[in-house]
Image: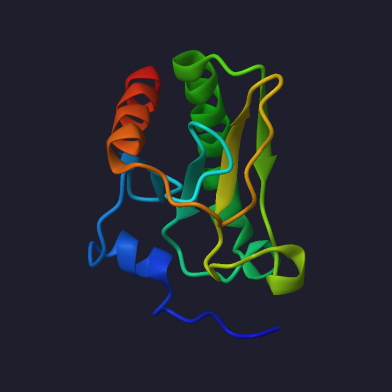
Length: 139
């Protein structure tokens, strides 16, 4: 497996070098809107600890992150009222990983609305900001 590269975009966002539509942040995780969402309200939960993906992650980091994934999924459910919630995590490029810093996707699913393709189609910044505010308020 390839080593973790600290120059990845998520690490730059965590360090404040690149802006994001932040939903929540604490010492362990950054929660932000996916700017290439598959659905309205698509959120990313990013542990701040350096790891490429689930395969090389410290179990202690996972133990602190998974409750945040659940918390964000519940907040998205409350704020956006989707018909379901999809939680996804990719490991390596053949599996769909495009940013090589561990992260989890919380994707609201709406009956009759097809999901967009992973990493395609940039969302409107005003819509992302509004969704981030609504989900943050539901946390």
